[in-house]
Image (cartoon, rainbow, N blue to C red; front, top):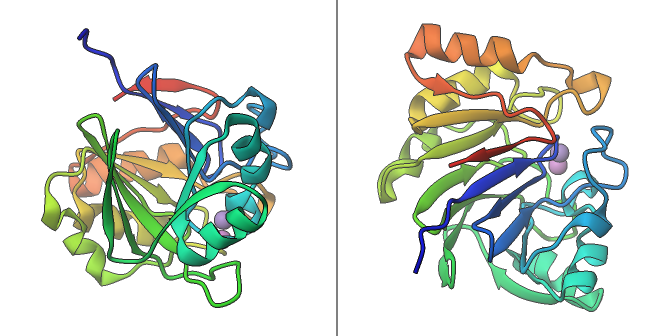
Length: 226
Ligand code: NI
Ligand code: MN
């Protein structure tokens, strides 16, 4: 088999895609109403949809994309149930649990945030996708147990919200990054609305200056090779 690169496409806010050219996962598929306007839900081709929690800017267009692609939704039990009620295929997990999939694995981690759905809980995600491991924090406050997220092995990338107001702001995200120690930290969840207008370049500069860790601003709409 020929080696296939793993690529990450960032659509702004908390929406991104991992693909090796054959298998594609879209995370928190918020396109309609996403002020970055980098894609339409009709553009998205995927086999899997991973959702961190039920807020509209994260569950997003899961119903539309899931139906169009016959994709499998992977999320907490409550969000998976919501997806099933909408007629989608879903796989239910919960915080602390890991499950293996054809592409690698999904582990749901705690996130300190509203669930956006009755009785639920917000989640973060550690995903291993064809050999690359990423921590996607979802929406969360800082919590000190972030220091243990790398206990299962090296994290190649960490995607952390920096927007403030609804989630960690830049100062807490810097502290989080310094504990998580991913090879590369990517700021997300900023500038979508004026209330989360933060500077991702300043965040990355501080991460390098104060913690000697690599940060990367992935411009919304662009794709990087992992
Ligand atoms: Ni939220
Ligand atoms: Mn959010």
